[in-house]
Image 1 (spheres, rainbow, N blue to C red):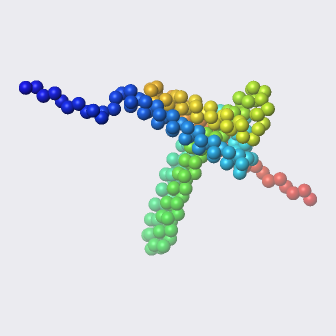
Image 2 (cartoon, rainbow, N blue to C red):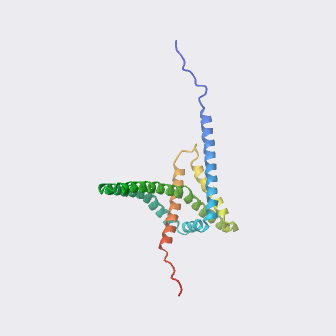
Image 3 (spheres, rainbow, N blue to C red):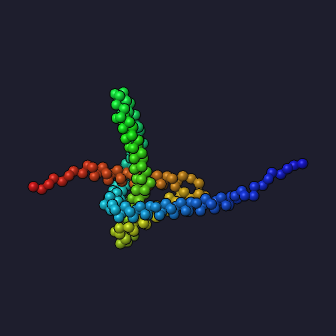
Length: 213
């Protein structure tokens, strides 16, 4: 006698699985859009010179920004390795000199520097870079359209960030195979990080103006 295997009645159908993926994707994109918009409003409200300065740097030097974004991305991992190396070397050195308290302090400072570097990079790459890219894109589109909104404080950011999220989101649609969404997202991060690097380097290298006697 042949026994038929039991059928799982609660097993989701392929249609239900695909629908769930699409709904999850939609909520994820909406949450990401709202997060970037709120942070964009906050940056433009509290730090307008800094935020618009990054956008102008990206607009005026897009390809150098991309190149320096690659350098910054690689430099992040180099900085982490350097922090680990210096922390271990300092702890061993002070341990050999029987300065246990200083050795423990070096380890504590190294751990703080390690996680602070990671936190700063994540904030810059995940949020600031994309907001700056969105502002630059929004200003470029509105300027090409001869719209007076190009000079508005917030509208370029709203339009540009929305288009950025939509563009990346469409390429990461769950029913579309491929890696184009991740690649576009990574390129946007590199552009933003490069602009941040160029803006910071220019600020550090800017010579102070001598006082008029």
